[in-house]
Length: 114
Length: 111
Image 1 (cartoon, each protein chain N blue to C red):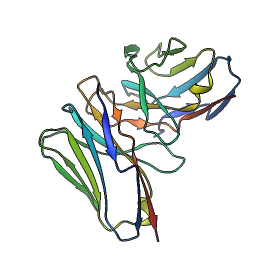
Image 2: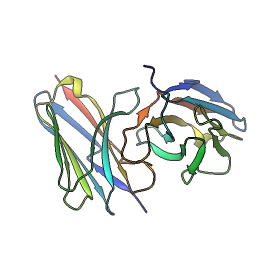
Image 3: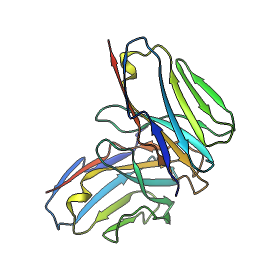
């Protein structure tokens, strides 16, 4: 079956622009996670959904970052007024349930803010 | 805060040599997972350890979870060029599956 897909794969934004990153999880997976990965670093947790409920958003770096999963399937991560420090790969992962289950990662969206 | 430290950052080995990467947490982990990320790729799940003192093997890979559930290691025997990539440990602390990743160990293998 299909894995986790993300779009766009690459995004270049001018500083101050808004961007929206999309994640399509594996069908039937309850949990969805967003991570930010800077070059040469491990992924850092941003936020987590269980179905449509956003249960943890403790990793979102500022109020410019907003995520939603309105129907418990596709999720969108929105970054308003992008800054250069937002440049990173944004990874989405889904898992069958919550803790204790492997996470399936998508290919990521590489965001470059110029 | 919750943090997972991983060493070494880089490891260069000759093909056929062994490789080990270590992870340590200052607080007790609920479980620990290991992922491999190839250059330009995304993390791919390898294994999960849950029980204190657990040891699991996958062919040439041996994973261990410490007795206190604060540390873990991955050992690869007789490395091959296909083992190239960055190996991450990622722990959970009873918070709904949120993974706290280590910094990763980048393995390069010289044929």
